[in-house]
Every structure is written in structure tokens, then in C-alpha cells.
Image 1: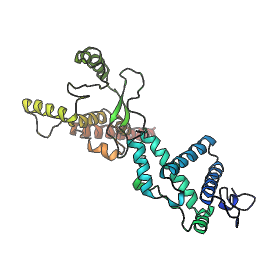
Image 2: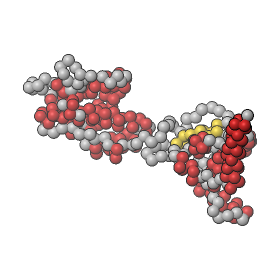
Image 3: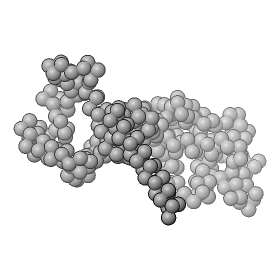
Image 4: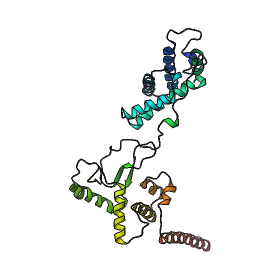
Length: 308
């Protein structure tokens, strides 16, 4: 979108008059930058509330570092985001939105198309740079970043894993697991209504509470499993994680779609799920026999049709 003067929305010459001395040059240029930034975003059909929110974030960052955009550095962003996280304890998603607002503003004022770098170089002998980079901001790597404590009401047909294994730079991964067999709902109902109340953990949100902490840890579960394994004389290659491998394998052998199985166990890539699949020779034989039977039946049907 080009204005009547021939410049794009937000360009320096639309907001500053060439050759005119400014009374407060730094303050006036920064104000003109913010106005141009707002116009550039409005030209992209962004909501006015979004534009105002980003503008306020940029102002807050400028006030925090107490200097103007042509003096900003990545280290200032590091300090600001660190303060937001450690002192103000803001959510990851909030901090990411703040950093994205500053990134968008820096992208705007460093784009030669808008002429702000040339204007700053002419008036102040320096120019703004992009200070928000991949190496000093959190990466958005998972879809759901809601507070893991938040949950919906429900019974046991779908279990919500609220504190799953987190990805780098993100909170615990949330996902839902469907109880696809007949027996899990009954087992879970018995546990939560009859067994768990005996632990006296009414104020503990964990499904499997611990006597010494919030919840039973994986290391404790594995050590207890090893003790049972040795007592039963089972193979040393079995560990507590073998239950996960068995779950994947049983779903595949029961005919569930591989994509559904991948979603059940929370794998991002199918190749990871394949590492957990240990189908038996009987399953391979049944699968091969099923396809052979269908092929033979189709061939016989074709032959019968020709004879008729």
C-alpha cells in the first residue's frame, strides 16, 4: 500500500519534514517511529488493539533501557526478558509476545524501505539494528502453552496428561490419551474413588502422589520395577519404559492406525513411534496372511467374472 506522497505507510518522510530542525530530536524521532510503526501495521489490517498492545510494549522496553532505538543492543533485550521472567514471573507466552513486539518494531525501523536507518544516521550519526534474534529469545515449539494446572472436567474415557515431557524452552507438554480398551476406565475409577483417598493427599493435585513429595518420580517407579523383575526372574533388558513399548506394540497389533498411535504417545514424528514398535512374528504372519487372502479373493473374483 503506497501513500499519496509516493511513500509506503510509516516511511520517515511521511512523519518528518526534511531540513527542519527539531526542538527535541531524539524524542520526536522516536515518536514519529512509533506512529509510522502503527500505520504500517494498520495497513496490514491488524486489529487496532493488537497495534496498540505492540506499541505499548515497545514504549515499555524503551523506558526500561532508558535509551532510544538507535542505541538498543541485544544485551538490553537479554536483561529485559530476564527481568520479566525472574522478577515479574510472567508466563512464557507473555514474554514471547513482548519479544515479538520488539522484534517487529526493529524489523520496521531497520527496513531501508521506510528510510529510518538513513534518517537516524543523518541526524544522530548512528542507526538502529535488529536486537531480537533466535539466540536471545524463546522458540515457540509446541502448540499448547497453557498452564499445566488448568484442566477440563471429565471422566476416564480421555486422560489429560498435564505435565508431559517438555520441549526445549517450553512448559510441560499437554496432551490427551484415550482409554481405548474396556478395562482402563474401571481401573482408574477404582484408583481415584477407593485407593487414592487412603493416601490422605486431598491437597495434592498429582494423580499418583508421593509420601515425600508432590508425585512419584520416574526413577522410583523404575527402581521398584527392577526389584519385581529380579524377583520374577525376568530378562534384564526390561525396564519400566517397556510398558510404553508394549502399549505402542499392542495398539499396532490390534489394528489401530499408526497416526492415532503416534498421537496417543505424544510423539512429534512417526519415526520415533516406530522405535517403540516391537510387533511379534505372529502379527507379521497374520498381516501377511490377511493381504494374501484378499489378493487371492480378488484374483478368483476376477477369474470368475471372465468365465461368466
